[in-house]
Image (tube, rainbow, N blue to C red; front, side, top):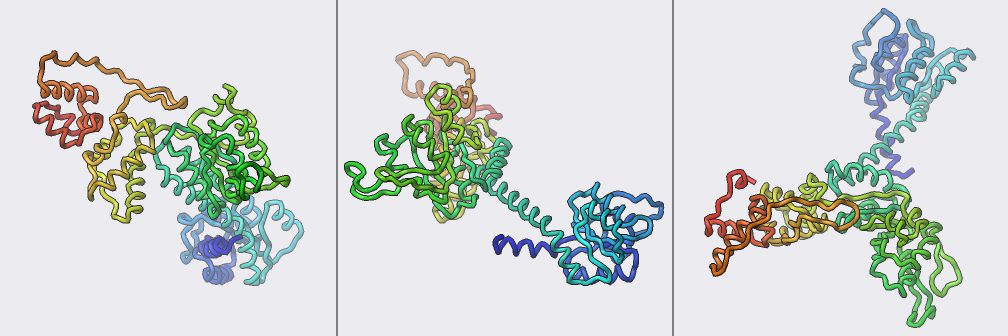
Length: 503
């Protein structure tokens, strides 16, 4: 256990809520006063009936004596640990332990008793009592028993806390839109493991970004994160690039070379565009992925590395397997966990969050204060198809921050958006069905001879019709500055309805 983690657990001991059950008032007050020196909350109860009220249940007795006035309020504190006498009126310690086991099975119980009858001890053991402390109580013995009994509880809380922090961290980096919730949960579960991960999604959906996030949140974060573009590796050099070679292994090998997999030892290797990997190289990858062993070209000795493998593809790799273009055995070794990232057009509620993240990242990189993204800019961003997905959104935001001022408006955004961003059909990959929208077929242009102004007016009118009257979207589609576009509308006396003006 790390020193930091141990410190966290020790500091959490003080935050424990202790329920002390003892029928002798003077002894109860004395023990409670001692425990309050070490723990923030000590609840007192004079019998099992009172104690069960802290677990939101009434005892069987009709005697509803109040909890002593100097004790903590049970209704606002759920006990982390129970210290109880065995022989008590109304409900003894054994019955109390039995009831607590039904209500809160994981709450540890310590018995403090002067009695050592075998029958009592056997029943207590059967109920899973954590420890016995004899009366008169040795305070060191009591504190030691509490520490041992609650350590598993605090360790579970520490792990749960780390998991919550990890989930929040991933959500903050990839967006907290509902569509990303499952992705965040998957990434959280797998980040601290060594499972191989396959990321699937259209080009630009953030696969490399998510791979880097998973690495940075894993125990391997201090080691290398090596990216391999498998689709661009020359086949005749691919094996050497991945596994390295010895001097003289082939013509041109004038020195020893460490391969990318060895450079990633103790860290993560990211195999991007894995679907482009040639069949011959797939065969060599198969053994490496399975055993994490390889042999550099020209070497007779085998080497072994400890790495996590994350792969990415913009195709449905199962379809590639069925088509015979990708080895089935390699697919299953790479895909311990499969995470599919949706295209941005299917997650419009994530656009604003991602835009703000890229806004802050770019501002940090430039060393400037983050500008304000006004409503017109947010509306324009949300209206786009984003065929280039997250990668395109990030590029637009970076350019807008670089060239904009303290406030980024739709006009600042529109000049950095390519007209193709508003294409209606998208068939980037096999992951989603192309989106189609029906438009009214526009009329033919005005007949010649006609002036350039008449042609321009007709073009503006048809573009507005195509974009359903949305001026910002129309300006961006035409590749025009928004304010220039508005001046053209005024010049040609093209009116836009009130409902569009408030777009």
